[in-house]
Amino acid sequence: MNQKDFKPRVFSGIQPSGDLTLGNYLGAIKRFVSMQDQKFETIFCMVDLHAITVWQNPTELANSTRELCAGFIASGLDPNKSILFNQSQVPEHAQLAWIFNTVARMGWLNRMTQFKDKAGKNRENVSLALYAYPSLMAADILLYHATHVPVGEDQKQHLELTRDIAAKFNHDYNVDFFPITEPVIEGAGTRVMSLRDGTKKMSKSDPSEMSRINLRDTSEEIALKIQKARTDSDGLPSEISGLKGRPEAENLVNIYAALSNITVETALEDLGGKNFASFKRILSDLAVTELSSISKEMTRLMKDQGELDKILRQGADRAKAIASPILKETYDIVGMVR
Ligand code: TRP
Image 1 (cartoon, rainbow, N blue to C red):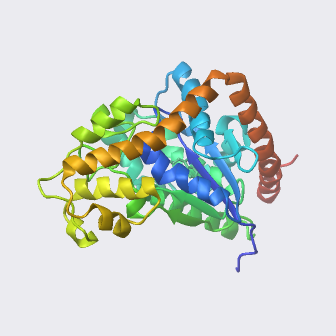
Image 2 (tube, rainbow, N blue to C red):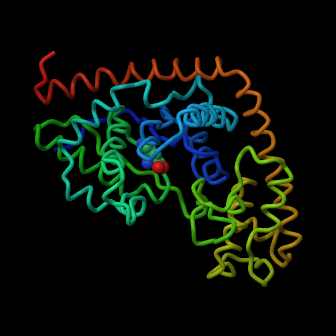
């Protein structure tokens, strides 16, 4: 069946757990901001229902949700242009996820590598929700008939599952109702890696604080982390080929290019021939300048919890206005009496 035309609509989500990192900012939020200013309707969600698939301290969860909202706004997402809200305020997400639990097959979920990584040896003792996580993620996306989903490379498999769920639902109920969503996977260049190990993604769950830069780090912390970042003993090359097999050097150059909004090629034209000591000073000045204005704005926004909560509530109302008719129609298709 040919797909009908769906309106270009972007949906993406970030878990409110722990601090926001430079990786979230350069890899995700900056791209969200650029999509907001293109032809799309944009919806960005703080996925608190996903966060609780592993234990969250309730006070910290609430704080992280508000901080993520402040981080979104401080980075340039405008609540008047984009819909910003936390997932649990729109119960339709959980309702559609239940329907999708009936569509997704055990075999599909058994293949999810993120579940295997997160559960590890603890497989018998993780929550049922951690296993069902990708089905909720499919619901997040399809509840808005989203056509484009910007995510990191690590979410590619979950997006394929989302496409499989949409296709099987459409097929089983003989409808053309859910779109087959386009993944918009971040390029390798925008993927920020750990400062301690250039082959691992920068992550808020890494036990080493020195591995990541948090958006709310002080200037001193940012400078120290960059100064101590792992490198190799060569200087900086003037061409990309010179970064091959040097993941730490490549990561720092990528961060420099992303922060300056230039390509890696252009960055290397300026940087080629420098040693790491002088490059790190330039990089740390750049990072401090860009991040300190975001961090200041976040601190200011965090002082007015009432205002943040109002933004989230209004975002949830707008989200619900789109989600509710789509859930109702889904229920009709499935044969639920209402
Ligand atoms: N699973 C995503 C992550 O960990 C977060 C997420 C939840 C998401 N729902 C989503 C991303 C819907 C995009 C679309 O990064």
